[in-house]
Structures are given as structure tokens and as C-alpha cells.
Length: 378
Image 1: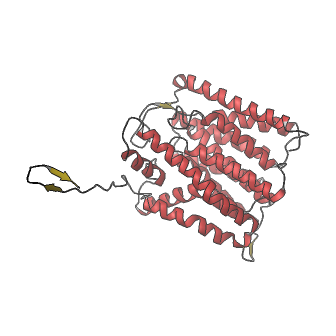
Image 2: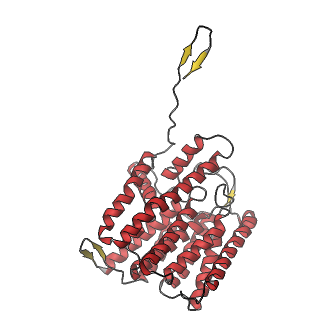
Image 3: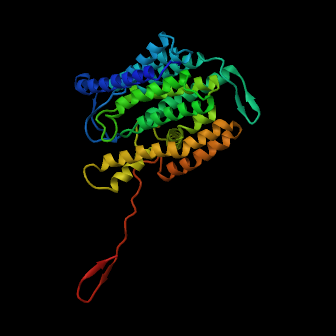
């Protein structure tokens, strides 16, 4: 993506932000008529009826920007038509689910078909290398990539359970990956960087309304589109060699670890793993923080702390390790282990995958009686 000055990219970014902001306002206003207002249930982390489907705003604004730049030849490559076609279908399926609750089996079949075709568009995929051992079997690589993207798309949807967390995670990943490509190439001229920056800007127009206390949720339309687009951009960067697999295992590690650990524990417990629940580590931690506070805004403060905590982990822990994995890929697997280990310990300590809440330790008191009849608690 080449421009003679920063003015044109700046105007494009402002336009994308304004379109996303305006669309979010429109959805907020029309949500009751469209049937998008979601009433709280036992599996929800909110207590007031709140509109969903707000992710349509950044879907529309980002896809419109991608289309304009692609057909004007400012952007090129397989990744753009794949996102335009596959992303539109994934978002439409998610929006339909927001409206009518599509059965899981139909949703998975549709997602798998879209993702399988999208991954095939990048064939042949690059070989996977582990300490000199190379896996270069086209059909196997296609199968592994397809299954990985199906899981990534759905885990991103699973992790969109409290105010702001999915938007914060996606924006931090997009910006960090853009910077990593810059560190490697010394420029902001790649198609992947343009896609990620435009999507991040469009997300900001929505996140104004989604940060605690959220006035609107992105819904399946937004969360599945984000998961799909991030996965496709990751695949494109692997194909071009601008980023490696280790980077994409480290940058989104908060979501990888929490969702995967929770799923495995629920499967071991023989719970219905594909049903909505509130046993992710971030959900249990949010409820714990809420229980330790008082006041009508305790829930909002708890959501804000968990979402911002995710941002701090991404910037302070995962980004530096991603830089190491980028420059020294031979140590990539070890770097992934270093990145994931404290996160695994954290989600395990939060009881991810277990029903109920994190138990509060009550302060034990005893009374010292004085002759005057006055008692003192310690």
C-alpha cells in the first residue's frame, strides 16, 4: 500500500472510523425494531437488556475500505478477495445467529465450509519447520490450517463475554502484528499491515460504545468476523514470510490459553462443551473482582479491570516475546512455552472450566473481651 504522503491514509482512517461510529449509532437506535436487544440469562455477564449485533458497524466499514482500496489497486493479493468473500459470509451467518440462534451443527458446517475454501485459496501453504524437521504435505497442511482457523474463530466468539474484552484483544493483536512486520521490513507498505490498521481503526469506532459499561455488544456477527479476519491475515503473513507461526501463537495467547484450557476441562468433566457458559477464567475473575467491591458500578469496574489487564499482558508480556520469536524463530517453540506457562497457571488458578465462582477467603475474627465489657475485633 503506497501513497505519496500520509494525508490520504489519514483521511481513509478518519473515514473508516466515522462510518463505524455512525453505523454503531444507527444500530443502537434501530436495535429494538430489529429484534437485537438481548435480555440477560443465567449464562450472561450483564444484567440489563442490551443490543447486540453492533459488530456489523466495523464489518461494514472495514469491508467497504478493503473493497475501495482493492479495486483502486492500492491493495493487492489473495488475502483481500478472501476476506471480502469469506468475511462477508461469516459475518452474515453470525448476524443471522444473533437474530435467530442458528443450531450449533448448522453453524459449524457453514463455518467449516467457508474456512476450508478460504484456506484452499492460499494453496500451496508454506511448510512447517520444527528444529530442522519439515512438514511439507499440501493436503495435511490444508487440513491443519482449516481446523486451527475453525477453532480460532469459535474461541474468539467464546471469549467475547464481558464488556470490551474482545475489542481490546483484537485491537492490541492488530497493532502489535503491524509493528512486528514493520520491525522486520522497515516499512508500512504491506497489504497485511493495511488490513490490520484499517480494521483496528474501524474497531475503535465501535469500542467507544462497547467499553464498560457497554451500551451495545458486537454479537456473533462481530466476534466471528474478527476471528476469521485475524486468522486469514495470519495465514497470509505466513505465506508471505512477513511473520512466522510462533508469533501468531504468542500474540493471542490470552485467548488461546483461556479458551482451550476451559474447553478441555469441560470435555473432561463431560459438560456440554458447545453450550454457552460462564466458566472461562476471565468470566470467573470478573465475578470475583465484582464480589470484592461494592456499589452499583462494581460490575463495570470489574469488567474494565479484566479487559485492561488483558491489554497489559499483551503489551508488557506477549509483545516482547513475539519480538524474540520473530527474530530468533529457531527458539520459537521454547518462546511459546515461556509465553504460555504463566497464562496456563493463571487460568488454572482461576478455576477455568469449573462451574461456580472463585471463593472469597473470609476474614476470621475473634473477640477480645475487656472487663469494661468493650469488645475488640481482630
